[in-house]
Image 1 (cartoon, rainbow, N blue to C red):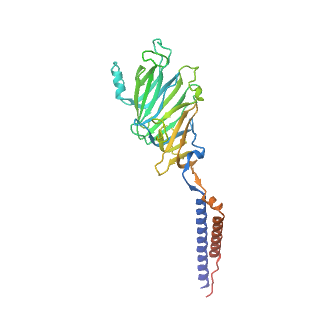
Image 2: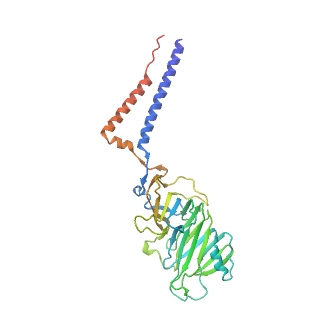
Image 3: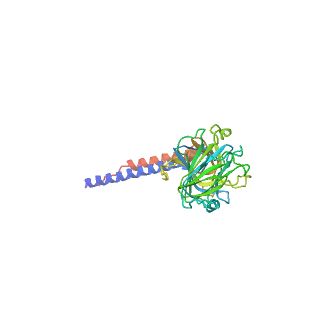
Length: 363
């Protein structure tokens, strides 16, 4: 009989000790959570998004749920600068019907099936009739907004030779328009002739607007180069090339921003066409009140991309959410701090009492 009583006592004491430790752990977890409560923040205050930097060969920008202020679905555009040419390479794309009809009207028959498309400057076989160079306007549009846009840089730094970027979308095709123009349409000057290659077909083109449909998941590469090796078209802009994002620029405070998104992140660059699965280095997601994040001031440098992301959202940096310390605010208030101290003291006393309480063994 005494042996059974002793065993019951031990079991009861083990239960009380377990209960006390469980209550202490719950209280400690609750106070830790109060010190680390995720909250939406203004992105400008973090110092990570204005500007955000995407390094060549190491990171990519992922834009989820893009929204543009453009009836034509304009994602980005660039008016060619003086003494600047454009190389465009599409891994899987097709010419649109209007572009094909232009070539057919002059007796040429480009393929209509998707394939690789390459558009690059070509030296004409006839003398120039003007010293005024052509300029190439670049537009990227989407009739249906993609679910995601991935923007990055591969290869070597452009230095003084070029500025470049690569783009890939998920969930929709892109429409590319490359329009090479000169001040006088009757003249042929430097940078006016290009060579268009679609699969095994090729044709020199002079001052013709080309529209291509780029397949979902296909890489699009743009290289902006000096027309002359000794020229530097980006020198007056600190060496960076700026692209316009979205449609019409904001003219008054009530206009919607040109380019917005539901979420934006910078991630380590994945290999090939794989979508990166590693946690975002930095990310921001819009709040549930309908306000989106705004993207502007997009710059292409020799070995990095930069842009500004503004708005209010849920932010993570290196996998850790931005938080607010409510416990610190409690500790800064004498009355609340006294109540918290009293609660902790009472809790510790109660745990000690149930853990070390003795049980009578009288028969």
